[in-house]
Image (cartoon, protein in one colour):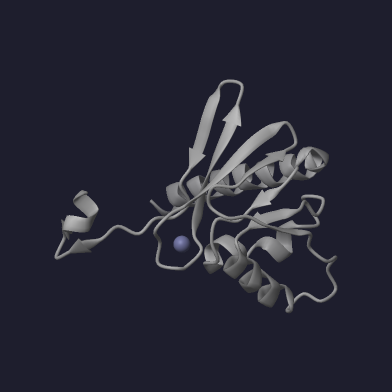
Amino acid sequence: MNVEKRKEGEKEKGRRKEGRERKEERKEKIRALIITHGHLDHIGGIPYLMERMGNPPIYTREMTMVMIKKRQDEFPHQDPIDYNLVEPGDVRTLGSLKVRFFGVTHSIPDSMGVAIETPYGNIVLSGDLKLNHEKGEATDVEKT
Ligand SMILES: [Zn+2]
């Protein structure tokens, strides 16, 4: 059983490595990094990825930008980040795609989702969400 788990882990590790290598090979095509909110699982990897991705501009809301800047203080040797503040309702053209930003409810202020307009249809990424439940049941606010 351990051998099986190890094999699965190795396979996953290989896939992650392939994904990372693909990003590095195609970094000239990366137009932006959109950060939906400031939780560490969303901003913690930025110092490790920016150079590999060619230091693309970051699009995010103000509180998230402040949190990223604080995190970047721990990596003073890195190139400065090109921050672009957005608000719900804003539309930006990133490369050849239009991106619409919208607010979402989450456990941290300034959370957002994005809708990316493509010739084939929209891609909607909600970001993380917070649902209102009490004792396992959706609250009245959630049902509306
Ligand atoms: Zn979150």
